[in-house]
Image (cartoon, rainbow over all chains, first blue to last red; front, side):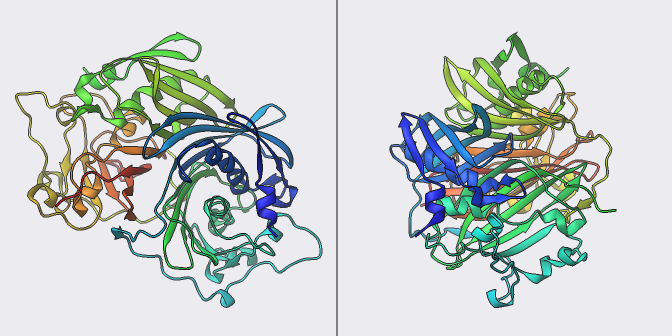
Amino acid sequence: MSRFRDATTVEKLAEGRYAAELDAGYDISGALNGGYVMAVLLRAAVDADPVHLHPVATSAAFLRVSKPGPAEITVEVRKTGRTATASRVTLLQEGRPVVDAQVTTATLAADAEPDWLGEAPPPLPPIEQCVGPQPSDTDRGFTDRVDMRFDPATMGWLDGQPSGRPEMRGYFRLRDDDYEPDAFLLAMAVDALPPIVLNTGALGWAPTVELTWHMRALPAPGPIGLFGSGRMVRDGWFDEEVEAWDSAGRLVAQCRQIARVGRKNG
Amino acid sequence: MSRFRDATTVEKLAEGRYAAELDAGYDISGALNGGYVMAVLLRAAVDADPVHLHPVATSAAFLRVSKPGPAEITVEVRKTGRTATASRVTLLQEGRPVVDAQVTTATLAADAEPDWLGEAPPPLPPIEQCVGPQPSDTDRGFTDRVDMRFDPATMGWLDGQPSGRPEMRGYFRLRDDDYEPDAFLLAMAVDALPPIVLNTGALGWAPTVELTWHMRALPAPGPIGLFGSGRMVRDGWFDEEVEAWDSAGRLVAQCRQIARVGRKNG
């Protein structure tokens, strides 16, 4: 049984046109999680590619707040080649574009070893030493769809003691959901961390303006390690970089988003 | 006098439609430099935004090889807000899309200090200790438009001694051109380094599939330091991350591209 699978299902209406029903269960404070919405639109993008299997590059511009309920997705294949297909994808609600995306699909080898791999980030603490919301009687949306376990070193902001660095790290997995990690779950994972600027004193929601992620390998079953960091907070803008490493120790996704800093402390 | 300014000029034909003449002088081995082409299409994107001045986020999908000669650029403004405008931009040649881009324009403060800034990369050697092509009697295209000065530690591949790490670093400035650094020159700078995989034994052209860069601050006059690195080479794909720091020591741009490894050595 997988709510994630159901919540990201798309129905083909015609060539390049799909319908979806966005699930209120992926809501965070009045907006659907951007990664969830990417997962939905990537289902359509991959379906529309007659050749390739994986979204290796996805750039999403978040134009409006996504709401639970019906959505339409359009996919315009711009070029298909032996190596990759490039598409323009739009998710619309009530006839208005909500997310614009450019998606490159290709087929990644399941078992290739890296020819070169940079240093892995310092390992997360064991999952039982990490912290996260416990299940609740009331449905809190996204918070209850995922079972995040955060590195305590990056969670001091919850107690008014931010680390002072734009960072956030933790394990990501679904809660009460048998879905195994794949490209669509990675799409949700790379946007699942709380805004890293909560650790530099910012408060509240930090809207993503643009997010680009690259799928680098097929994720193994098990929790996904998310390593979020940033290079600069300036003039109301910050970058958030997320690397996703699977339970087999492979770099499976890289992501950077540019976002607006939420309301400042004090 | 600025050839770069002339070579990136666009002429407005109608609302959202521009004409350009791509300059053969920005050619590298039969294809125009992707950063140069981005600079041209960003002129159109910024012109089409009635409010904002700077391309803070640009995602470009490189569909076909750009050729010298006439091009048309279409700009579809998808949403204009107080903070930012989102546009879809396409550069076409002979009626076919060559580069698709999503561009977010906004206005960056000229003089804001960062609220938080990560560690700067280790400094480049002094420019006089760096190496690069000398001026030539024959026009070698892009190689003669720019005056790149590379960190010798990243140039061993020229002598068959690659460093073994996907990396490339150097100073970027225009040759014989009075143009001062700005958003459009940054667009060219972030794609100006030779492919970082030349340092892991790859040979030849490494075609960019998708490139996203973020403008973070207005660059000061003077050479721009480019710091290129990568996280993984796998299955024919590699990521190339470039940070651009200006002569005043400010982080002015961040870029990541996903590209295909060129023909392998041996």
